[in-house]
Image (cartoon, rainbow, N blue to C red; front, side, top):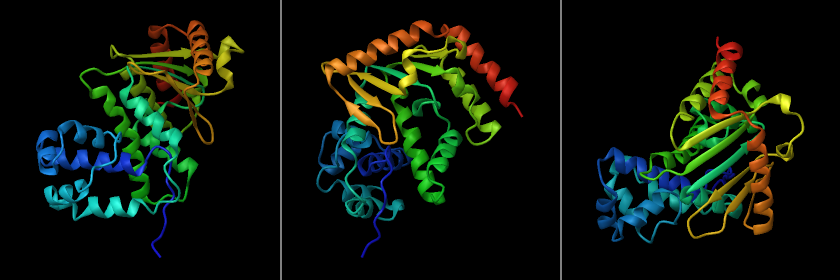
Length: 278
């Protein structure tokens, strides 16, 4: 009997498959339109497959194996084998990944860790190891690659505007090694300089505030209701208008108490240099 796999949220078969198609195509110097012609589909279909937004159409894995022979038949083998993973990919994660990819704006409140869209590879690796210490190197590499793949939304011609609110305690939590945290905070400070990314820190001196209930993210897409992801042991994605509005108000209240962007950047850099620099 084939060995079943445990699917970790954030790396669905369709999302991982798409990421591997993109890597192979770019390594071969092939455009999405060229791959689409080989597969008998439009380049927009290739784009959605690569983004993990759509299942590959019939015959697509076989075409990829022919187009990218250096992969040794990976695409057909993986696609067929992925149907034996334990349980379906959770719908809440599938919905959120789609919303994140299509978002015009993202609002993120995180009181515990640096959010995935801003993580370095080593910070993500340390988090995965903390969650599951039995991961092999190959599985760990795939998880980290899938996490970093999400950051490709910043490379779009029209990247979403991302507003990130961090509790100050996030800057002082050891994840991995001091060097890992140091490098991670420098990356957050650097990313906060981009015109479409805002990062603000909620100072610990503020005391009680609406964000103490836990982490959440809200994605706003053109022509669709806002969708919200609540972080927990098992995340939940919700579209109920009344509840999303409640959390949107909470986000605005947290932001009103947070440090301005420039002061937040200084706070992040100070923590990196004074607490974590080795």
